[in-house]
Image (cartoon, rainbow, N blue to C red; front, side):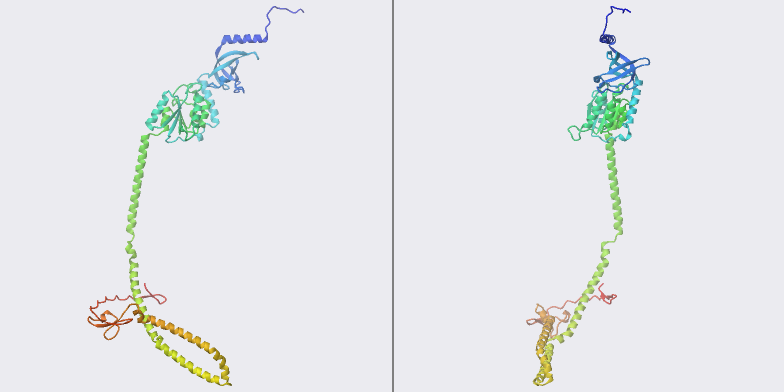
Length: 496
């Protein structure tokens, strides 16, 4: 069969693909496409993201280049309904058309809330919202770090409220509180404050406040960003979130240590009222002083009661002093009696140890010894006498024995002589004393025995002197009767 021939122009596959690509791009340009994300597996290793948009009847491939993906405020998620803005083009390698997305946003508030709830559950499952991660707020922070817009009314409200309650040093970290870069800037501010080292040129805050005024869910979406939530949960500095009004809830509120309904409420949480604090401290001081005064008063009352019940010092020592007086009196009398007894005993011994008595006794012994010596000589003159033979050895040992006996007796005599001299009144006179003799030559033993004008003799160690009594003697005080001494069990008298 003869082939049919035609004069139609022949196109290559590349030409057809490029022509279709140009037609699609020229025809549609930038478009907004609403659909549900499907087939999303996260960014590719190259940083690009590939997925598809679908509705009930059709499906369209989509791509987000790496540079655009990092700037998206809302990242694509599987099953999320979005409105994607970009341009249509084709991919000649597979004869498919696709949309190159430049911006993406959830399709309505319902989609945002669904996304928000899904993200909240995911972060909660990781434990970022656990109560045990929360930190206590400092009672009186010296420095407060505020993360907010420097030009809005929020920062003015916070500063004004702090000045009213308790003026405090404030460091403001300016950020955008709305838009695509909001989340990244807020997270960098939180990390930046935590990176400040204590003792450096910039004082490290004791408390952080992340604040923004009210707005729609789209306006507050930056504070739902995952990086913001993670930065708030990881903050080592206690953090208060004050985003939106009381009814506005963002994910940073779950991760912060404390949520304030408004920025002004955050300032009220941060510091106490100075006037109230001063009044409280003064009240505590007053109560402390009163308690101290009451305590001192109680101690004084107790001291007075104890002092009144205690005996006086003189009463405690009265009995002892009386016993001491009696003992002193008894001791003096006892010493006098002891001396008298010793003197009487010495008087009985003195005649026996006098020089004449000792000399007489020595003479008697000497005569007896002479007699025995003569008898011994007569016995020794008889050569055959048994007595001589027996006495010759004794005679030889008698002379040394006699000499030893004589030396011993002499030593005893010397000792007795010295003792006699020590008791003699002449030894006392040699020490400067004098013995008073009355007119009859008797020793005057008391001043009462002498009369005025009576002549007396003063006997001193080297001679006698005559004297006349010039004044009458002073009467001697009456002698206190000696108390009866108590007998102890062993028969000895007690001085007490």
